[in-house]
Length: 408
Image: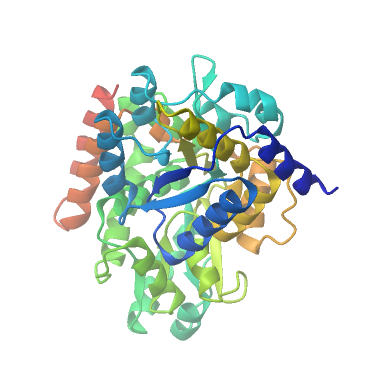
């Protein structure tokens, strides 16, 4: 019996639940994301006796998370939910509202197969495991349209400085240099990606993990805010709202590039675009090939119904199986959390990410260091800075350092 068939049989054998409808909430609603979610729902329905009830919430995580939190805290929990790794889940765990999955993690040997190890740490509090990590997402990418640069008569850039230098030619050719949606988290993501690429790993860690305000006031972060001011100017004619609309500007060669997480790959894939032929991707903006270890985890609110609890555990077991890891992540554009799966069919961009992981180029996401309040303050600042061309880089850096100084 093939290994995947054996694992599927074990999942079914472990199930003690009656056939149960399990509502799963998430914010995977773009075209590429919908394809990936379908992989999960099909696997759950075919390999367990249960039914996946899709609870998609339109918008971003910023829109969905308050809705999800309100339902759980208000006593109307879903069966399973996507949540960002970080302090939101910590609050729910301390309140005893999320299911402990340690027994399943030990049963399936998650500590032996999850790579890098800090991925499982994002689900762990006081030695207990409270989520099934599904993938590794990183935000430090710029996606480039080859045709846009060809139309402008310049070479496709290999790093951020070359991208900025090519911008006048793109504008002359009628292109938007940098596609950027108007949602607040997108400009913050771009700023964070530039911070890591331009300030460098050690300086980034000092600010985002060690919370050193004096470093945030220093010369390296001065370069970051100057780069952000340049990016603000390059994106001024990008009038779309959603991140995937900005991605489509690159796909349709209307824009030179977009700073966006690796989930953008799903949009290129459903558009039939080929990495290395139609578009290019630069991890770390082509400057520092380091990626943060963000990603999606599935959490399971505590439920008094034993059939739902059993169905929750069946889904948790399924998510870490090799078959689901491969099918979901190939569709999503993310990297699997298992280090032992076959990704021979991965595209050029995914292989770049895998190579970075293999070299130990993964770092902890700042979402795990800062509280939601600090993250919100930073986001508000960056949104204000991005929206106002008269807001100077120097003033924004000063305000940013003040936030870092008080961060908890």
